[in-house]
Amino acid sequence: MCSHKNIVKYYDSFQIEDNFYIVMEKVECSLKQWIDDNRKNQIEKVQFLRFALQMVEVADYLHQKKHILSNISLKNIFLDKDLNIKFSTFTVKQEVSVYKLLNKQIYALENNELIYFPLCLIDEGGNENLIIQSSKQDMYAIGLCLYCLTGVSYMDVLNYIQGGKFQININLGIDINQLLQLMLLRNSYSFVPTCCYFIQSLQNIIKKGNATLQIDKDEEIQLLKLFQEVVNKIDYIKEKQDELLGVKEKSEEIENDYSSISLEKLRQLIQKYQNCDIYYFFEGCFHYRNQNDELSLHSLKIALELNEKNDIALYQQGLIFNELGLTQESLECYYQFCRLNPLDDEVYSNIGEIFLNEQDYKRSKKYFEASLAINPRQYVAYLNIGQVYFQQKMFEKAAYYFKKTNKIKSDADAFYLLGYYYEQKKDYEKSLNSYKKSQLSNQSDLPYINLINNIKSLI
Image (cartoon, rainbow, N blue to C red; front, side, top):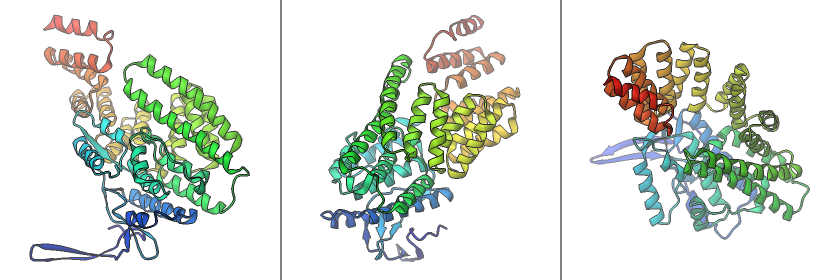
């Protein structure tokens, strides 16, 4: 049972004949109704911060309980008589079909309603057209609700969802506008921090009170436009990389061009506003893309000094340390990340890979299983459990996990190892079929021509 001041209280339930009744806490109106009723009045910054902090605090509470927000919308977020946020719907993580998401999208577009999930999710369904609803998408949904509170029209919000421009509200200040844009990354939502980061950031804004940067409104607008350009570049890079999947040279060319442009814009931002951790995080990411690990780690270190709850900076540090062979430093970053974000399946998989490389099979399997407990469709964890068994020459068990991997997403390594497994069993037809599928998944002929020809000669 969940008990939080910003969750509608459940009192009782009963049935009369065929009707089932639930007795719950009284609320005054939905957030949508409140926005509609106050459309002519600009929301005060203090009230906006109050709504925002309550939303992310209740989301953090639910995530700690391993729940996520379910079907969140302006219509099912409520307000009590004292204008306190009241959430009414949440669930455990669950699989949802891409077909269902498409239907939601079509219904929303036909009825001029909002779509409360990043549209890029529709492209992530894998072989079975299923995705896992997770805490990663919750911040986008909350961000969309908060964006509506800034005074933009529903048509402007619909336009943003479909790829349009974020509408800045200068009266709310630089920090709030930047946090909203961070929540609302459309293609790179893995860059979005956890609730604890946003709680810390919102509390910092509240503590500053009326203190502002020593710049005028025109300079504030210029800063926000610069930040908006950087965010758009990040989303654009991810979108173009997805479109050019497999065309490595073109994808890298786009990434390098936009990294250089964005780094220059970030330098301009940092010169004006040196206390924004997210600037340094983005700078660290672009240095990493440019293969400058030293500069990347320097920027990420500053980001964490400015905000110790910046979990995405910790995660990026962990990746770089691991690539440099500094496994203990990498593990420390990942462990700290887990304390801030216990529901991220990828980090457990990354920890498992470190122990797998050290041939600590017991601990590596433990972390891969932890990853799967959070996300049963984490195909990399299935692949790596297969590797755990394969390296211990437990080939039957390994083959079982390679098959589970490919059921979720076709993976060149999984098919290759299955090909080897069937070859050792002298089941040459299945071996040939697996090697061919590995060749297709890898989008390269060279490593497989001799293998395939050799197997054909044995059939």
